[in-house]
Image (cartoon, rainbow, N blue to C red; front, side, top):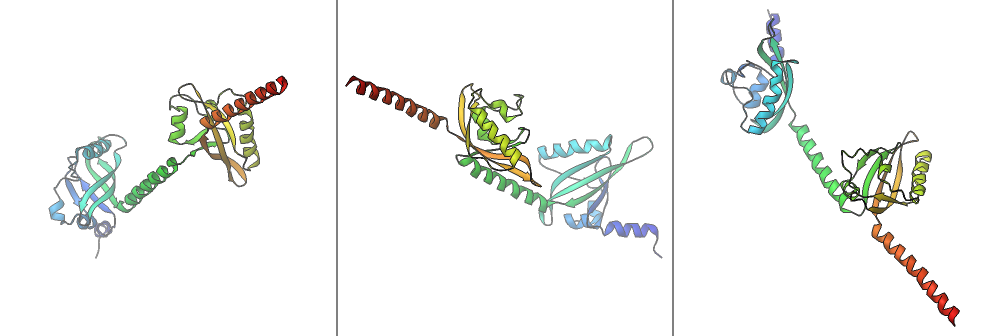
Length: 270
């Protein structure tokens, strides 16, 4: 007849997760069948060996720092370990908890592990795709941003940060904090407010910002409201630096005025 201990052992041995028990000194006291199959060794070979052997110093330091928590509150930790297995290098996530006696002395540690290599590879692929996408985005003329309906900056592209001299400790959270005192900015602010209120896209407009070196830059703004359940929850848009274009336009306007004045003088003189 099967005893309760036999049923428990059968349950543990047939878990897909890896289950190990090791001493405070790090020597394995118990390993289940799944862990044996993972590393390609027998129970006899593993029991008594060092758990989580690592060779890279930096990687070892990270694991050691986390495992210190097993010997003080909360007496538990979570670590990720890249290790050599029968299937090659795999990333195993371990959740460990200490077994203590009445004086809170750790007598052993139980850890359960799971192979998360697939999710790690997917995460790495997503990060690679995001970097490539960001490279494409940052290669064009447009510089992208988003802000809340309260004008708090959500996302500001690196090029905008460079253009305006955005510094993390500058104390400026609102995008309006970077505007100059030019009265021409009023019309742009009104368009943003209308877009937030109506949920409809406004025509492009220009703003003058104060740059990081104390000068000013002109940008052309294209933005669109982000809606949720028919209500504006954010504004997303792009900027194009038109400072030089603005200077050329102003120069042409001044030249036109000068030319008109000269023409009038010539006509009056005749």
